[in-house]
Structure formats: structure tokens, C-alpha cells
Amino acid sequence: MLTVIQALDQVVREVTTFAPEQVALNEALGLVTAEDVISREGSPPFDKSLMDGYAVLSSDIAAGKRELIVVDEVTAGRTPSCDIVSGQATRIMTGAPTPASADAVVPVEMTELVDGDSDRVRILVDSIAPEKNVIRQGTNKRVGEEIVATGRMLRAQELAALAELGGAQVSVHRKPIIAVLATGDELVAIDQAPGPGQIRNSNETMLCGQACNAGGVPVPLGIARDNRDDLRRHIEEGLNADILLLSGGVSAGKLDLVPSELEQAGVEQVFHKVRVKPGKPVWFGVLRRGGNSCLVFGLPGNPVSSMVCFELFVRTAIRRLTGQFPAIPQSLTARLTHSHSHKDDRETYFPAAVEWTVDGPTVRLMNWHGSSDLQSTVDADAMVFFPPEPKEYAVNDRVEVVLWDNKVRL
Ligand code: AMP
Ligand code: MG
Image (cartoon, rainbow, N blue to C red; front, side, top):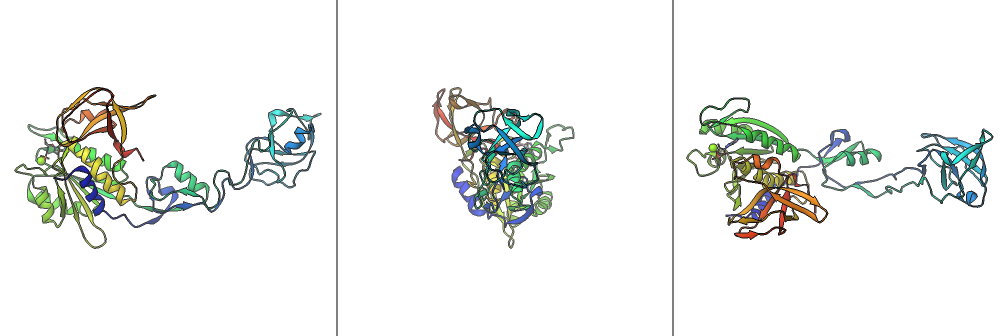
């Protein structure tokens, strides 16, 4: 049976990154850059004042010249109509370009008009450091420097940095369409009261949420019953997506028809079963058709198994499709807050909560009752990785932790 890293490696190998496309900046939130975006302008674009006040020659103030003639006034959006020489100042507002020879701005609070005359200003400080309250052209970003690197998911701040430098369009990879199909005769929709032996289809809600968080567009397909006809119909529909997620029906039960129906539909199995807890029965395959293929994950029906398999394998596929790297989950090291007896010989991903202390991250294991225990994930923001050998862990032992949503970038 495959180890997690072997299975992740197979996912990475099967997935080809989407072709880049141009998108308007205002539509690009959550999309991933397909190229390095290089600045063709400097930021700021001109030398500018950081204060309302008077642009001066700092050498004048140091030399004791405190009464200056105001020769010009510049507000934001205008340009100086003249330069200044010794003995002169320009009244200037925040964001306005400074006159070429000025090397400092004295804030208006440190000045007063001489006899109320707006053409003469008295400086009330003994000195002003050169460059004080002025930001030079290109200080934040020089021409030719990178604004955003390839493979970055665009957040508000990256979009704003691109907007500042005039990029109304950006080259990105689109979001994958992710069909979500729950299977099981026992399932009812979440707005229905379960009858005897029935349960609500909570996996659809969960997987659609995870798909969205990972940068995909979820398409819920409802429930397929545990018979071949219904399953086949739903699978056909789901295979139009970039990724089809099925939950349930992949283990060894009598009605676990998913793997055979997928293969009937032309989906080539890449792997079935990984030596992981929870999630051992997970199935992965690819439907190849011309240029665009559909990646298919048969996730185990138990909610925590589905959730963990999504975080490990499906998220990796999404990151690869959208050109993010590293594609596979990244971990951090944290210290256990409690002792723990690990008995399993499978790699185990245990729901946990990370707490950031002055001594670095610590991690608290949830009270976890196994793969059906959704409640254990509610206060969790991570999963602790236990290697596949029985071991007694003590308080403060260091363990590897994968954050939900793969927040860590190494
Ligand atoms: P299966 O993988 O189909 O054998 O299902 C394993 C367990 O997960 C069973 O207890 C199912 O009732 C449960 N299960 C399957 N599908 C769902 C679902 N969509 N939502 C919640 N629980 C489910
Ligand atoms: Mg089932």
C-alpha cells in the first residue's frame, strides 16, 4: 500500500497546470498568478511629501535661516511651478510632488506665518534632517523589480500592489470546477429529517466548503444511491468538471460500487488505498479526454476521513492545477501540550489546535473518537502527523503539524 508521500507524488505527476489566461484585476481575487509581474514604473512615481507643511533646503534651517519666502504652493495632484533656492520654501500638502531642490518638509505644526503674511513662514525648529518627510521616487519599488511572483494566490494586498502600478489585467490560472457527489442509500439532504437508519449528507456541505477555501468552484451534485444506474448517471454528470469528488462507497462493503463504476466510465485508476489514518480506502483516478482531463477522488464516507483526504490529496491537486508551489502540504514543528500514546502502524493525521506561545508553537490534540467524529474538527485548525510506528509521546515532544488550509509556506 502507498505511503502518503508516494500517493502525493502520484497526484502531482498526474496533474497538469491550467493554461494561463488574462483576467481583469477586479475579477482576480483568489486566482493564482501565471507569471512574475515586473514593475514598469517606480513607486512612488515622483518625489513626494509625506506631510502638510513647507518644502525647504535642510541646509537653510541648519544654518539658522528660519524666515523663508513662500514662493509656491503645491496640492496633491498638482506639480510645483518653480524650484526653490536658499531662503525660499514651498507650501506643500501630503502626496504632492516636492520641488526638485527641496530635501525636507517641515510639518505645518512646526511653523507659523510671519505677521500673518502667507508669503512668509517662520520655521520653529532648529534643524530638520535631510530627507525628513519626503519619500523619493522608486523607494517602495524600483522599475524592473518584481511586484508579485508566479504561483501566488492573489489577495487584496497583491491586487492593490498591481493596481498601484497600473496593471488592469493579470495573467492567472483559473479556478477549477469541483463537482461534489455524495453516495449512499442512508443519506438525506441536510434540510430533511432522517428516518430510521438514515443520516444527513454532511459531506457535501463540508467538501464544498473545503473546495471553496482551496480556491475551487464547488458544484454540489446531490446524492447518488448505492445502485449502478443512479451512480452511473451522477458520475457522467460529474465528469464534466475539472475535479470530481465522490464521498463514500470506496471501501470493501457490499455496496461500495464507486471504484468499479468509475472504471466503467473510463476513469483510469492511479491508486486505491493509502496507508493513512483516517482515509485508508481513498481512490484516485484520471479521465483523460483530449486536452482537458477530469481528476477523480473517491473519498471515504466517514467525514473526518473525507476531510483529511481532501486536505492531503485534493488540495495538492488544486494547488498543482492552479500553479501553486510547493503543491504538497507543508508542515511546521510544534510541541505537544499533553502526552499521547500512539498505537497505529499507519501514518496518522490527528485533529489538533495550534497555540502560538512565546516559546514557539504548541499543539493540543483534540478528544478524537475516530473518523466519524466531525465534532473533533470543529475547534481544530490543524492535524498532527504521527509516523507509522507505535510510540509513547511525552509533553513537549516535537511533532509535525499540517495546518488546515495549508497556511504555512516554507
Ligand atoms: P462508506 O464509505 O460509504 O462505507 O461510508 C462510511 C461511513 O460514512 C458510513 O457510516 C456512512 O454512513 C458515512 N457517510 C457516507 N457518506 C456520508 C455523507 N455524505 N455525509 C456524512 N456521512 C457519510
Ligand atoms: Mg456507503
